[in-house]
Length: 131
Image (cartoon, rainbow, N blue to C red; front, side, top):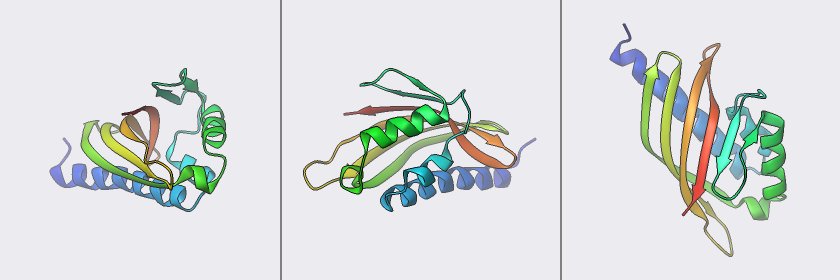
């Protein structure tokens, strides 16, 4: 059986994945940002405005096309609204996101499925919407 302490450690590891992603993003480093995703053809990325993307390479390409420079990337901030461990190696997360940019501040919600691989938590499915 899992302990509350172990669950707390795992939840902090998951939060660190998102914090690291934010830091990479805010340094203009999409390749670093992508380290939080499962590098697999089975990675799924969905959004309201685009057809689902499958695979790490396709997701990277989508990000680079959508955010070609630091200006378009803006400053990324997020808030975790809900984070649940559903097993020893699977978790679900819901959060809010916002990009702080000179001309606009797009924002929305995201839902992540995360899985633990070799003691590392990675995003296996990302569903993001703008609101």
